Image: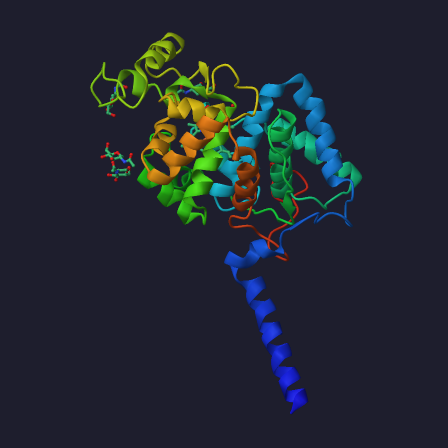
Length: 331
Ligand code: HEM
Ligand SMILES: *[C@@H]1O[C@H](CO)[C@@H](O)[C@H](O)[C@H]1NC(C)=O
Ligand SMILES: *[C@@H]1O[C@H](CO)[C@@H](O)[C@H](O)[C@H]1NC(C)=O
Ligand SMILES: *[C@@H]1O[C@H](CO)[C@@H](O)[C@H](O)[C@H]1NC(C)=O
Ligand SMILES: *[C@@H]1O[C@H](CO)[C@@H](O)[C@H](O)[C@H]1NC(C)=O
């Protein structure tokens, strides 16, 4: 009798593990802080060292490095697919490429430092997660414990990028739908949008708000402060400029602080997706609270939400591979 009971307990435990391993929605449970503790003990220290070296000379690279992890995770999960090159320009990174991502050479530098120390051990997907944390921390932002153990995927598709990334003109309904579709909450949405406290945007990502809002030339977005429109127009002085960059958080675009929320509260969010955070009671009260308190909880919240984001659609265990070069799948 006792043995039978023991067997059924063991069997249930076995089934539990099988389900955990087979169910992709559970794969993130195999991630853990310090995954490389034994296989590559210096991994995180090596990344940190390269990051400090680079960012002390070029602090404006921190923003695009934070953004890379976001784009990686929202398209096919955090599997390093944003790093893959396509000879026919059909990869994730080729989506709106004139307006888009930067920092790939830095990921390559981090990867080669890691390959020297521990060949074939640290995935490119994990590098993106660690680099995003170190980028934020190095420019006076929050730090958090990064979960690792992701494997790299072998597919990267421009259509999947266009289908999964939120567009800058998204309204609150669409933003919530996209985030919830990735298993993220409304709170994650308003917290992660706070990453727009650093970095720059091409004029073309928001110029319709200044010149062509309703589809009729000369119309502006009423959700944007009129004085701010004037300032933005002097920077972005014509429609369709794909070269000029505007600071997303003027005055402190190189520092990770909470001033994004002050700007959004004053109707000075650069994108409609930023302004949209005032159009939902939950996101609006978060914006107002952080604006009023100089970001009382923003840094802690950001760490929590980045960990949540880092769990989207990960490959773990026997799934995926450890790429030798981040821009190419293994032969
Ligand atoms: C909520 C939906 C979001 C939308 C619609 C959005 C949209 C955009 C757009 C249009 C740009 C400017 C691209 C350009 O013209 O150069 C941008 C930049 C940026 N985004 Fe977002 N984003 C969103 C969420 C996020 C999240 C979740 C993160 C990170 C956690 C993030 C981090 C950044 C950073 C750091 C930049 C500046 C990049 C640079 O300086 O090169 N964004 N975003
Ligand atoms: C995008 O950039 C490429 C190379 O920098 C340039 O040749 C092309 O004209 C740009 N596309 C647009 C639509 O401006
Ligand atoms: C929000 O955007 C979606 C998709 O672009 C659109 O279908 C919907 O009508 C918009 N909702 C509101 C309230 O404007
Ligand atoms: C203005 O917006 C409308 C509607 O989105 C678009 O069809 C038109 O091409 C835009 N005009 C210019 C000059 O970009
Ligand atoms: C969102 O915008 C709509 C349309 O402008 C408005 O009727 C509604 O009250 C807004 N909701 C919130 C919570 O601000």
